Length: 191
Image 1 (cartoon, rainbow, N blue to C red):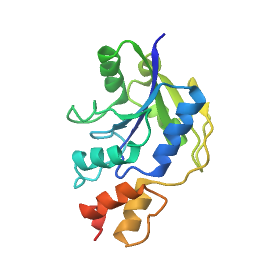
Image 2: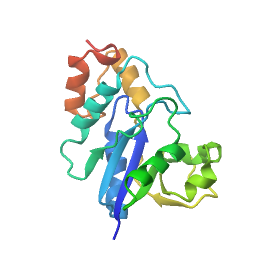
Image 3: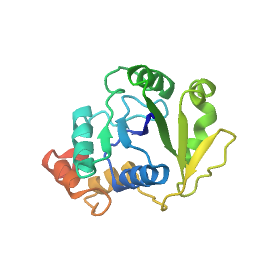
Image 4: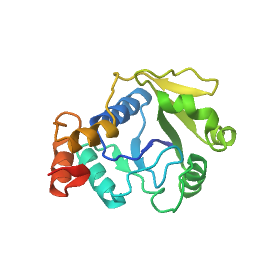
């Protein structure tokens, strides 16, 4: 029987508790063997913060997932240059690990965006999409997506970066380990 692995992509700039909740809810609901957090190199739909290094994002992710035995980091997109198209990534993952059945986790905001994804019709033949609810976004789609209902979470990395730059608290939005890392490395305008 194939191992079943969920992939949760994102900029993780910084990783927050919403990412962990999504991963854990999908892991449990679908009884997957593992969830891999996959930082994007250069996502096609948005610009990542140029001054936060890939190493910082990986270090913060490592701190975020350290206490969960079924969480890991997938660096495949960081090993390539240029735009990170899911189609290209999935081809590489399947070639590298043909014994694994991959589940690609997306929020409802990305479900709405699926018709614009690069080679979406071919991609749907390669991977199972898993959609999770997000406040103020519809999960309705014509695409074959497994839906997992999670507690409504309205935390974003943008919110966290803004709060840090305004010297406001981010307690309970990110792990204490990540907050300590951000302060130690003076990321996002922290002191």
